Length: 146
Length: 224
Image (tube, rainbow over all chains, first blue to last red; front, side, top):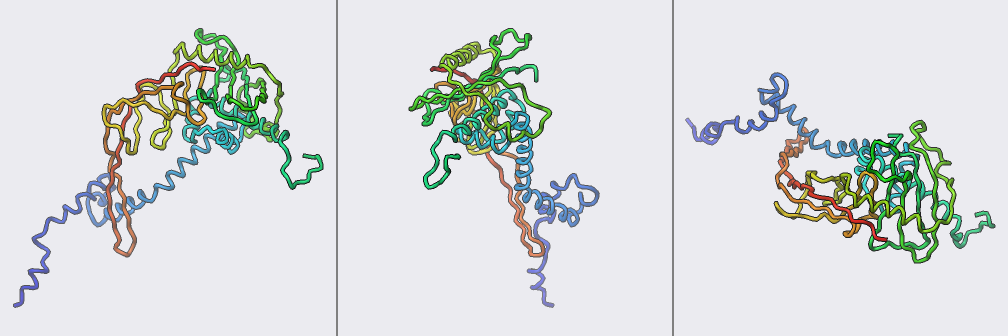
């Protein structure tokens, strides 16, 4: 009988298959029912879980940035400034505080935040006045109306 | 909170060609309070803000007005509130000196705990003394090194803040910290999978975390 083939085709003699599955068992320790113990059932859930965790980086960041934006907007409105103009005025005045720190200040350092808002309001007012004093651009006919 | 601030006076000096001063490129905010429960605070009752430029052309426009506290009833500000509704008057330099003097007294009293906003490794942290920061990136200094944090965007206490445009100078602020720990983060899994194509890639990675303890924040009085 030809038995050489069986020597190469045998699946015995390697390491225990559970060693490969050991890591997945650690991941699935808190799952419900047989998904906790049976590899074939748990691997389906685990693969989905790992896939979702890797692909959730971007939406997670967007979610938290949205929360920051909402907080900042609310805080600005309390002091009578619009969110976009607040940030724009700070940027033009080269105050480089980012939005996360600004919303943190709005929550935990309210006096500082109010001062920043007041500054922006003031600055916008000044710019409005400044526009009246600057010369009109060339090539534009205003007939003295601007 | 609404009782505490009841007058705000704003001073802004603007010139047509502005350049930054070396000593203080700071937007200085200072305010007083009215509650009698805090006897150690200064007795002036106006909160004022000073925007400092050194101008090549001396065209000063100073404005001052009083406003009430935040309007909680009106959620969305109307367009008209952002127009120029304040009076513009030319005021002497004396007011400015007064504000700076008040700030300097508050600085020298050292009553309140100071906070600072600091820029490290591309991130901004709001810190106080005795804080422990975790920097989730590569940070050169080794364990035990005493560091001076240079990029200070803002410093403040109970009654004043100094806002840098964009950074406060070394003369005005000094923040010292020590590196305490350098560890790795928890294991983060990167799993790529494509259905029905036998594509599975499993990768574990760990980032380096550095812990800093903030030892002290010192503010020096402003020089005019």
